Image 1 (cartoon, rainbow, N blue to C red):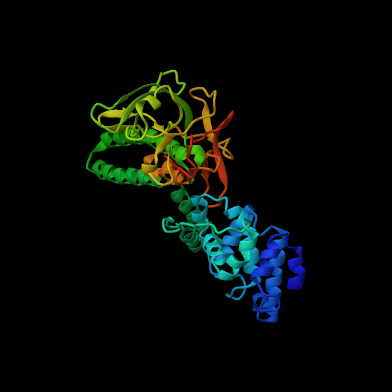
Image 2: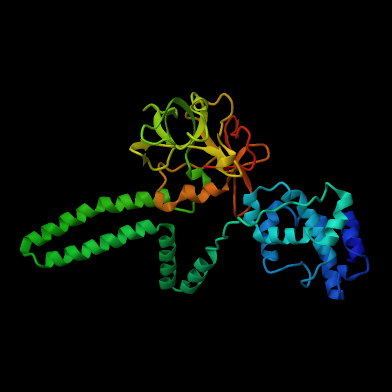
Length: 406
């Protein structure tokens, strides 16, 4: 297919952008016959619409990682076409989504700032307006999967012994904590065995039987913990509920802390919660408020008062100096109602988050508020948006857009 035929398939104003930014008959459409065919092929892919769909972004991310441009590493009309197709999606992204697709973001920003592209976009405004990207604070992109795969391949073998080693490695990855418990038990067993060798006769046999019986409950406890903590952190592990502040006062020993009594609909009554909100939310704005609470964090002592939950608050995108607001459940919500993430409705929260697993710390960076002020979690791996909601509606921040939640 020729480039002109592919261009004809592009919708307006994308077609107008490509025509204005790339000169017909020039090297913008390819220097060699091979490059010309590849440029036409990319424009055709863009015209079909699949390449710029969110569900295909991971494939595009992989494609762009080693490239500056799409074809033979120089600027062509294909780059203009892809940039224009990506613009409607990327213009709606939050910071976390840009950070989770570093190759796409880098490529997009490079193309949008080319003089020929900016000149072509001006008469088509606001269709292809310049998107200001603050990438200086982009978090480090962790890539943990590759080393793990290499280890698995090295251990894999078409033998029973090789399969056993692979299974053992996978078990270690699922729960390192369980492995430490087992190692500790092994060391204890070795010490006890040495002690038994120094004893005589029937006492040795009796001690061995008692020790074996005594160890069985410990193994069971380790198994139960392993089952609850198994797997990578996912949002549904976090227990979010609607809460109602029934009492609030300032901490007697800490100027910046409130002590709240929050009703989470439990038979045991309200929970004591300590929050560092004194400098950001007046006490009169805390009284009788409905909010969202994180209810399965490990209880923590806060200047002598134990806190049994955490209030979910929205911090302005410019930091705490810009303000802090309580995340609000939908009107009419009742204490104890479940708050969940869209797409994770069937998941069950853990009874208590293991601090060593850092579940909340792993998920929390994706918490934000959308342009609609709706609270959401953005998956850093896929860019998918999962709103935080109850059965009756989505939770919101009163005024903040692009806020972080914690």
